[in-house]
Length: 442
Image (cartoon, rainbow, N blue to C red):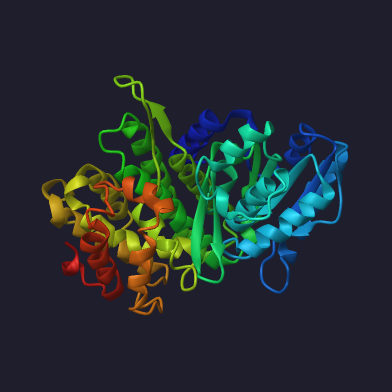
């Protein structure tokens, strides 16, 4: 294990403590975690295409053996969620939970199944029939306090190096009718126990791995660029530098050899740090106020692209263009991350990043990010991804939804809907992301 991997491991242990089992050969920890909450659990398991995820069957047997060894009962597993956690899958899983009345839910899968498990826990726990009232910040906690009981605990067993869903307070749910993704943000839905055995990712589709790696970069990058002047700046800088190095170095290795366990472990550590990034928070010693990080522009845009792009891919398309938009506000961040892309060969060696500033620096870093995506065979514009040009108007209007205000406020230069920023700043940036023409960006 190299220096970056060891540092990542130490950061994760400091953050999550004994509530998170990660590394290789750790699936046997699931049973002990479940036993903490009672003797009856419900398994929600992966679905990957028509084959139903047979690649995961040997690992599922390890989980059930662990449950049996710890005296935890489980019934017939429930099928997990499809990509982007469609709302109907949440209702289906919640209905099963309501019928079984388990002491805990073991959500086994990637970010979509874990997010659906979190949301289903809320609906079943509070006898709800509609997920809509829980979208936004802190709505679950309000109901929990009113009802006088917590949500049904979710033990998150991650199978994809991607979203950090197993570690965080977020649940992304998609309305299939509109293709728009909405977000529950609440401390009440953080899984009290989580397991990620990085071996599991060796059998996952390579496209899932690549998308997940790009999502991990987006988590760190977006929180980092919004951290200027925040009391956690140095902490997120270390997290971002460690995470992005691991992902940029190891995604191409994994693409070349999907069975490279060392690369898989590095990706797991890197994307887990992405989960740390979006959960970062610290009390400002001067003001006494809690300052929290969060994703912003890339993630906001990805919510409206579920019909066209996987989530990580959508973030990877959009973020380079926002790098240019926010050029003046994020020079230190551009130098930190630009050096990583330069070391990996995506920015020419002769370029002196220390002598560049403002838009010139931002454009150089953006082009490095675009070169990295191209290396992975991913689209680098919305047009290449098959997004119709008229969809830009849909994205602009969706960004004005009050439930997504926090994404606008998390930006390095916060956007104000009433001031018209979404139309004057976001729209031309999305037009640039459609065509690839950086000069269109204000």
